[in-house]
Length: 113
Length: 111
Image 1: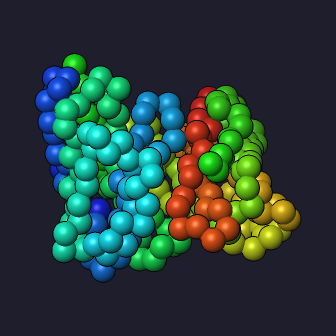
Image 2 (image 1 turned 120 degrees about the horizontal axis):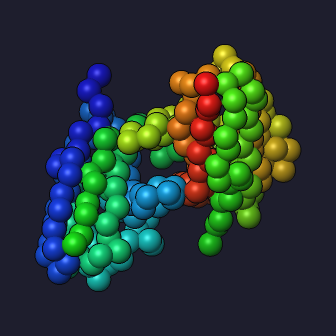
């Protein structure tokens, strides 16, 4: 089966610009996660969706980050405006259930200069 | 909020030596998952533990879940260069669907 698809793989932007990431989960997976992974750290959950509803977004900086999963399938994560500290790898993952194994995409490496 | 601590942060071993990483939670967990991330790669699921005192084995890897469901360990016997990577635990507090990842333990295997 196809894995979790993410694009773009790499992105370099200047601070205060905006950026968007796209994720297409494994077919049939109801749960979708967006993680931020800063170099040398573990993935930090930004938002978790169950179908098109938000399960948790308590760690999402809502003044600049937004995410949606309108049809309960693919999802976008947006940052506007970006800050230097947003430089990280943004990982999308999906799972069949809320507590089952998560399958990660290759990630998008964002560099804010 | 929930905290998941992993130690050590780094571990250098000679090929053939054993390796263990420990994961400790500030709260009781409903389950714990382990992932491996190769350098430049993405996390890949290894195993999930659910029951108190559970022990699972995958070839040279042994996973344990503590009796109090607040700690876990991953032990690798006779490491190989293919074991290189960062090992993360991810725990879910009881009654929550939200996973919290530890900082990870980076394993470096010297041939």
